[in-house]
Length: 395
Image (cartoon, one colour):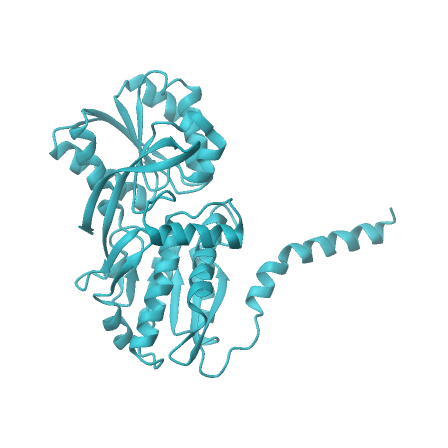
């Protein structure tokens, strides 16, 4: 092939690869009275599945409820905050605020993204709707943060209590080496030891490009009854579970307990029966039996297909949009930051995960926490909710 044709084809392929993101950034001009929501989420890089779940949850909500509230069109501006570069997130947020004049910022896949954006949203008095980032102190950093996911302490504390109640007295802790990992470790340790358990060891695993084998071997050598695991949702937990099985921890009877989606539905499909029995704690399961969740999952499958299945991040995005719609309606489309934050406080409605409420004192969720076990139900592997801790507040 002539050299110039090879170069041309390479350039064309690169341009086509960028089209989805470019088209999102260059959407049709919004009407003059539109309500603009800037969605900051990882749409590229190692956490791109976060952004995919966010966007799909947003799209399902808008499909079900339309794109107009109180006579104002709702426009979502999608921007890539790739989860590993807070400076990029800050630049994207700055552009959304100063150039696009958004009335809401939303998304925030990881804690560093939220912390990088917080001062900008605070200065502009723009509400910031958190759809995942789960470190507990985030909402204290700005009065304009409101969270529709959970805090790690809120999620992990019931698991620590449940573990002791179910005969697990010696546990090893393995968490990612960043703020959410430390918070998950502290919360589990506190709840587990207060209930009479004993922590036999702990490791902090690098956030980027981790090699799990030496950590899994260290856990095996300690011979605990179980290992408590916190890793960012996505590919890392699946890789850890594979090593957990390969190194014989499961065969040795060491149970796997996890915070967030250490064993999400994508992992279930990859691991098959090797995932049976894994225990996790979450605010949502694809298999949650409510009528609203059955509708949510049905609408999801019709629009996006059976894979990937919706996870807790998609539901937090769905609920975040429900809350934004409620605030816009309450304010008749005239968005003032302080009035909007007052309107968020105390919001209460039914979610695909169950009943939720915004705690007026903390701007955090009051919601059910579920202990889940991987089981085969009607021939399908699912995270079945086996215990419900109702209406749990963030500590």
